[in-house]
Image 1 (cartoon, rainbow, N blue to C red):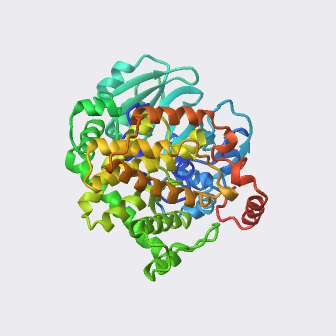
Image 2: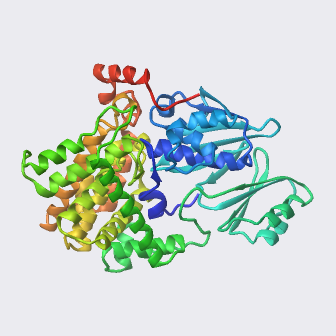
Image 3: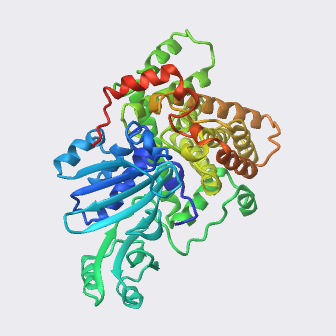
Length: 518
């Protein structure tokens, strides 16, 4: 799997519906790869979750089932039919069985699937690594490492055919996979043609060929040469505004032009602003803990019934609006995750509008934030199941602080100082969603993260000393995350999630849950 994060793959994205990117979007991507592995022909699916993992208790309420079913149907993560994906799966004649049993993998977000079409059987094991990112670990009992960032062709053969395959496809890479059922994993940046598919299938010794389409927006390349992967390396690369360094990085990482990078981020900014507008119109959804609260906040803010704090109150308003859209199955951008989707865009858009800045400035700020996220993704995690909420809301605060400094006219050094301060303030934050819904205390933690970002941006602009370089703070966050008990890392086994009232709310919601499961 590629070790180089992409701003658009790993940090700011995917565009999605659902309460959790590590559950909904990641599960959908795993389902899409399973569908391709079966050539689109699926009759039965056995899904296994380990009893010691997070999915054993959260797969239904946090949308893993919904996302997985949508992926098996070939949908996108923002498809409006996702809440009812179980019904569509049943209508398609696909039978699902979900079993909680030991599966021999210690990652808390492990999916083990066995699929058949009545004749052919395939197995796939994959993990969700945070923010919608995945890694496929095994296919048909054979160890692999796939992130969904290539067009992959699996050539099932025990014969030494790499020379023939290379001639037909001219791939980025051919990997001989053995251990279970042997096959060649052929990676290309473009989809192979039907003629090439037929030519491969006709080779002597080939028993089957399967094409797996990429599930990530930015593809990888074997020969990628990135300019830097830490703050220290970035500072040695050149003294530029943080957003320009982000463009340098993403151009090299994805093999795309500067203009394409900027316009990709503009599209994301417009989706984020649309989420804010949608939230402020008021949202409704059956399976949620909290109602539409941002509408009341706006009324009281406009009528000056709140404690004064123009930009801070705008931040609270925008964070709330985005989180409410997420909880009502509207379209949001995971930034860096769905559980923390309000903090970064809420803070950036509120500050930019409060300062009267243009959309281009918002795009630049989000690019700056994205590069900070690259450093976190490369050296720590965005997955609360692995590192607690410090990995989600803490990361969001860190990224937003750097972006706000740019919006305020600060320097590169001040942006990094603000990011360091914000992440320092977030270490040890647990993840304990009430009633297994990503709403509370998630909303408050998103507001806290955005407020933290604003405070740290101003501290950095006033030349406060952050003391510890950001690279070292990221390493500390990773170490702290591994020391947090698993009961406090995105399960319903600790913190607020096991209070008497939380358990009562959970029981109440279970009687009318909207996420249908088989």
